[in-house]
Image (cartoon, rainbow over all chains, first blue to last red; front, side, top):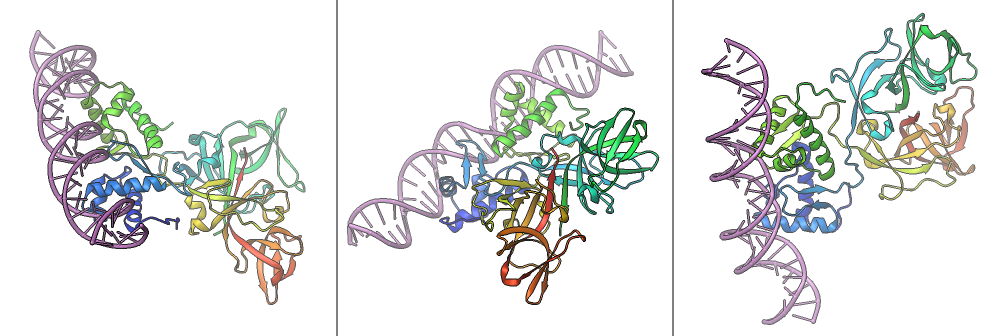
Length: 212
Length: 212
DNA sequence: AGTATAGCGGTACACTTGTTCTATGTCAAA
DNA sequence: TTTGACATAGAACAAGTGTACCGCTATACT
């Protein structure tokens, strides 16, 4: 728990209530609502304790503004998560096409994980099997990709191989008429395919692996 | 961008403004504030468009409540991020000790990334060098660890090796008096150390790799 | 033309809500 | 005991704020 040294029971109660109320309603409670919830029978006393909390640095207030207060987050960013579509599995036999229509599985990620990539263009894939082990990507990993149909040399991309009817992750290099798909593992040979035979689906932005 | 079909320019403006205002203040704007920001000269017109937005499903309102509205999040979770301390680099020559004191670098992660691990016990390390390549962890990766001084067999742990004066990531196995530290890579041999000579620092919960 | 409807502006009103003031009780220090 | 800081309660006040109502304009449809 967060350290709340030097706060009276009432003040801690107020903080708890405010956090809960914000989560439920999306906006802060009024002084009178706080009073009712914390068994304080006077608006002035709530106001009094609210100011104490501001003093102690747990709260920010704006004068003369209804519900004009905000919890100062300790160890918690007040930025929101981004929700990206979990399109499916990387070994799917058809090119991925699911998009942010809200249906299907979604994955919450931190904005920082995406860097400067526009959130709307990002989707996620679950890696199945160990076929990407040469790219330091294991079974069960989740890869975040920026939707794209072209790539720069050296990008780690998800490509649809027409003749193999499979999607795979490789490093991408233009080489005239054809493209070279280079596994990360130096002991494995690159794949050469016709530019028309491979279709870039996305460029890898990040990899997430859970161990629980 | 999110699809906003069927919304007038003003209504879209209102949505944009509300989102921005919430981020700035932590509570929603009033009808009059919206009016001022969107060049609507009448509170009733703001109210009118607000109700339109509710109808269209972009907004929730509570009657007779000041600032009693909330954006319906599309493609965005309303849960908050968790902020964990970035303790340092895995090759640091001393056992990590930085903690959630708010100082130092912090990293925002999605709650889902942590699974059921108590957020307060999680810290992050940046991997330096390719020494963990056998554990599918590359240079620059970020590992999230649950602070612990014991581990179960098979856990991927960060351990401080007293005689080598270094921290490393390995799979952990109790074997009587001593401990076996097993690299992920089957071509590498395990390390055997005295139980007293190695100190568990944390258990890996997740790995994050950025590619930008 | 006549009519219905959506959108807008202005205003008055009533309710919501933060602020202020006075009074009371508690508790520790002088 | 007296004093003063602190916490509380109650009530009155003023400002903030949502709502209702009226009238106007533009557009589309009959």
